[in-house]
Every structure is written in C-alpha cells, then in structure tokens.
Length: 311
Image 1 (cartoon, rainbow, N blue to C red):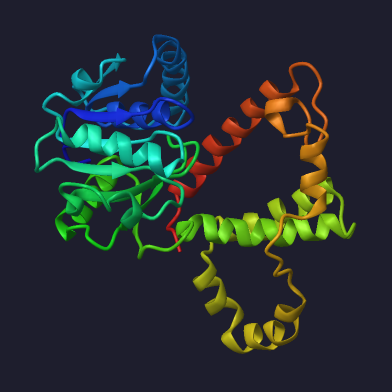
Image 2 (cartoon, rainbow, N blue to C red):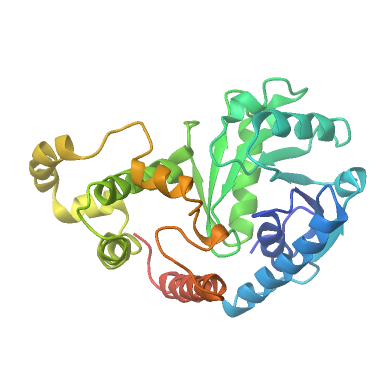
C-alpha cells in the first residue's frame, strides 16, 4: 500500500462512516469521524469497533500510524485535513449545505469527495466556490468489506481530483472504477435492473422468495462473482447473446413503477430487517444472527476471490 494523505475527515457516522473510517485507519491514516451529536458519535464508536473486528478476520496488513478521533466539533474535524469524505444522508440540500460550510474552513486545495449513491456530482457542486475539487467516491455497503469504489467526476471536476481519489482507493488496497456521471452510477444501475426483474417475477407469482434467492445466489451470483458480465459475453459468444436477447429482451420487465409486492409489504409495516419482517419473517434474535451470517459469508468470499485472478 502507498501512503495515504492524513488527516482525513469523514463527515457523517451513520451507515457508512464507521466502516469507511476503520478501513482508512487500518491503511495508516489519521481519521476524524464527525457527526452532529454525542449520542450518534457514541453509537458510531461501537460500529467502528465492530468494523475493525471484521477487518481483523480478513487478515489484512495493518499500516502503522493509523488512528481515529470521534468528534462533534465541525471545525476540529476539518482542521488541517488533507482529504474529506462527505457521508451525510442522501439529501441534495443537506449535502450542499455541508459542502458550503466546509469550504469556509478548509484550504482551497483540499479535495472533497462525496459518498453519494446517485445524486449528481454536478448538482452538488453548482454553488461551490471551487467546484473542481468535488468528486464522487461511492463506497459500496458494507464499506469495510466491499473492496470496490466508484469514482465519478462532475461536469466541473478537475482531473487532478479524480486521480488523487483513485490513488487513495488503491492505497487502501481497493479497486477503483472511474465512470462518467449518470443517475445511480454503474453499480446501482446494474443492481436495480436485476432487482426490478426479481421483484417483477415475485409479483407475478413465478417463484418464491426462497427459490429466487437460491437461483440468484448459486446461479448468476456465483458465476458473476468470478466472471464479470463482459467476460461472460466472451465466454458465451456474441452470437448466443444476440440469439437469446432477440426474444427474451422483449419479455423482461421495463416498468417504471414499484410493484405491488413491495408497496403492499410497506403498507403492512414489513420493511425488512429494520422492522423484523419483510420478504421473510424474523423471530427474536434472527436479524442479528442473519447479519452475522452475512458478514461471515462476505469475509469468506472476499478471501477466496482475492486469491484468484479477477476477470
């Protein structure tokens, strides 16, 4: 690993912030993790400890010198920082306000990256004093386990900001994917295309949730974890893809609305893990047990995939 800029400020300690901080600290950076209240920061400290423990399970090298500082002081979080990762909730107005507030504190040369899942970078930078320094840096959840980060420039982003962000991604041992700006970015567009077809088939009663999960996990999921989609096209042959897509594409779901199978569950208060029921029912302790199973599976999968040549 090459040396990271330090200190790095991570603004927002909700779903992503603690895992991002743990990953950076392990790679040798001093990280200041900021949020608006002590209660939130106290919860973040627990999440950070958990993420650090997960990283220990991966047997990754530890670079000396890394540390984390938890703070509710915005100015303290940004003092003399060399790089900023904004990870506040997905609200354009909120993100623009946080960016404006930090521009009043940090040096003109400091790059601001935003961990948005799909808000246009150009929209966020519209009112900035220095829009060239804003770049998308989309970590996939959980950020301490998914070793891929999308790097997305806006219309006014300087190439130097893009290249420095890519260098940071590589310095923590992750894969950087540079993309053009598009709604949802690449990962979520592919994910939601898959989910749309999955939910459509559930809505039509073609398959059960259990059957669908098994089919995707041990079919395309297992396959695509080793073979990327464009490599898969090479394996199958363009002629085979053209033959199948010529009749199948017209049958695939292309609806713009959320299907009833989802809206009905929402109306029933079945939101998933957060409510104790969704597609599946969860008894006492089941959600925590399932989360542990998922983390263990991701750790094992990452170890295995890291040992083979990616395609």
